Image 1: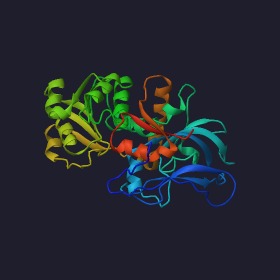
Image 2: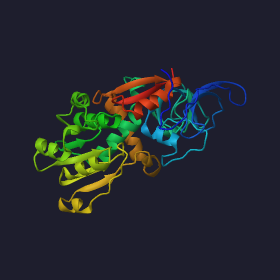
Image 3: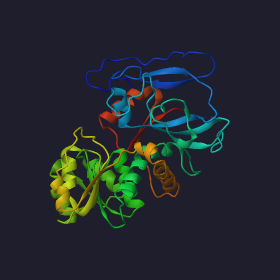
Image 4: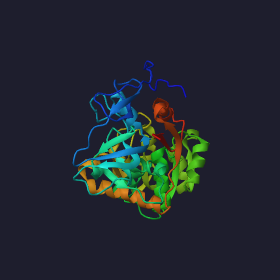
Length: 352
C-alpha cells in the first residue's frame, strides 16, 4: 500500500530507516519524530536490560485510536519526542533481568507498554506482562488488553452487570464495541441490544454474529425510539458508550430505573454535557472508565481484567474479531484505516 498522510493538512513524509547510535544489535521501530507527521520506520540500537526489566520479541501490536491521538499531541499523555506508539502487544520473552522471576526466556506474553509497542523489541517492567495460555494464539492475544480489558472493566467492575440485564452498546462494530458484545453475551449472559455506530447494516449483521440478540441502525432514525421498540418503555439496564455527543444523550435517555451508563470514549468527536435532571428522574448513574488509569490507581483490578480476558479466551467463551493486519512498514496505512473506520474489530501491526 502507498503511505498516505493520516490527518487533515499533514504534509507527506517518507518512511525511512537509519542506524541508531551506538553499536551492536538493532531492531526496527515506528517512531513519531514530530507531531502531526507520518511515522518513520527506523533502526534503533538495542540497549541492555536492567535487573528489573524484560526484553520481549514483539509479534503483534494493536492499533488504538489513542495511538493516533498521542501522535497528534491530542492525548492526555504526552511522551517526549521521539517516541514509539503502541499500547498493547503480544510476543515471546527474549531476555530477563537478574531480578526477574515471574517470566523466563521463551514465555509467550501480552504486555501493556504505555507507548512503545510498535517495534520488533520492547523492554518492559514484568509487572505489566501476562503469560498467554497454551491454546490462545499470539495474534488473538494481542487484541485483548485494551479492547477486552476495557469491556470487562466497564461491564463487570463499573456497571456491575448481572445475568439477564439488557445492555446497550454504541459503536458496536468497533474493537471495543465488539468486545463489549462478546463479554456481555457470552460471559455475563446479558441480553444485548446493540447500536451500530456507523449506521451500517453490515456492521449490525456482524454484531448479531457476535451474539447480540437485536441491533439498531441508528443512521435510519432516533436511538431512543428504536430502543423503546425493542425493550419497551422501561429501557435498558446498562449502556456502554464510546461515541459521545448526541448518541451518549440518547443512550442516557434509554436507561431504565436505576440504569447505569459507562462513558468509555468520544469516537464521534463531541463530549456531551450530562443533564442532571435525567439522572434524578429515574435514579440512573453516569460513570466514566479510563482503562489505562487503573494501571496506576488500582493495579489489582487492572490485572484481574487482563487475566480474565486471557482465561475467557482460553476457555473459548470469547472470540476476538480481527479486522485487518498490517506490516510495520504499513503503519501509516494502518492509522488511516482506523481513522476512516474502514475495518470492523481490531487492527493489528504484524512485526513478523
